[in-house]
Image 1 (cartoon, rainbow, N blue to C red):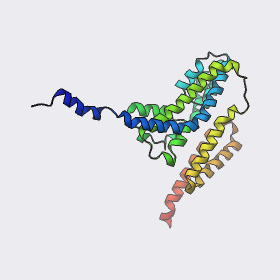
Image 2: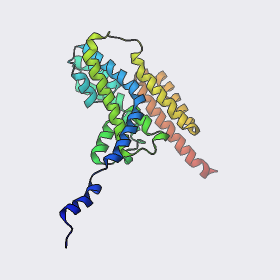
Image 3: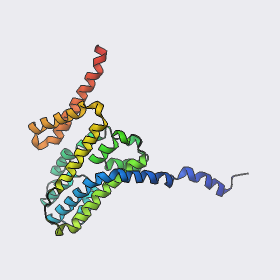
Image 4: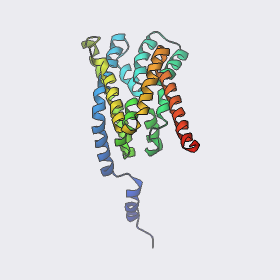
Amino acid sequence: MGTPPVAAADQLRPASAPSRARIRPEMTAALKDSASVGLGLVPMGLAFGMLVTHSGLPWWSAPMYSAVMYTGTLEFLLVPMVLAITPLVTVGLTTLLVNGRHAFYALSFPLHRVNGRLARLYSSFALSDEAYAMTTGGQARTWSSARIVSFQAFNHAYCVAGSLTGALVGSLIPPRITGLDFAMTALLVVLALDGIRDRRDDLPTPLLALLAALIARLITPGQMLLTAFCLFTAALLARHFTTRRGPADA
């Protein structure tokens, strides 16, 4: 005699649908984790929304740029490009130079802990500097898939909300507010210091990064970021092979 349909449905329901009671605490934790990051992302969004308004572009383009592109610095560069009707080749090259660092982020970002094809697709799209810094630290080694994706989604929402607010009230705010443009720099400095404190046993790595940045600043100030990443990667590879061969040679 077969299992009644109602009983069969009750048996399948727990396995087929994720428990909301289990996901909700992860989202709450992600919200708390993202609160400090939002202190830097919201002012950046406000500054971008104000830039869009004062440039003469429609207000809705600010939240659209932040929602669809979500590229941080590149958003600010795209505004004058749009106004100047810059060729797509130039826009593409600029995008590669500014956002090329994300290719390096992908090497150690914990995408393997994100479950589901759509979740992984969004997580790859929302891989920002802040998300990378927070999710690769020691405190995030136990973060679940829901917590990682929720953290990225909250960061994304901060940028869109800031851009929308800045665009709507941009005409009422002076074109430049002293200190507003430093909010993101301050946030990234704090995240970098947290990362160094979290990996105190690996001080050579941040020192190599600082040296690569200084050299890039001297030789290619116009393309400092890309040059610094290439130098830093080369230094890490050299250190890796030197360390690996050292014990064998001894």
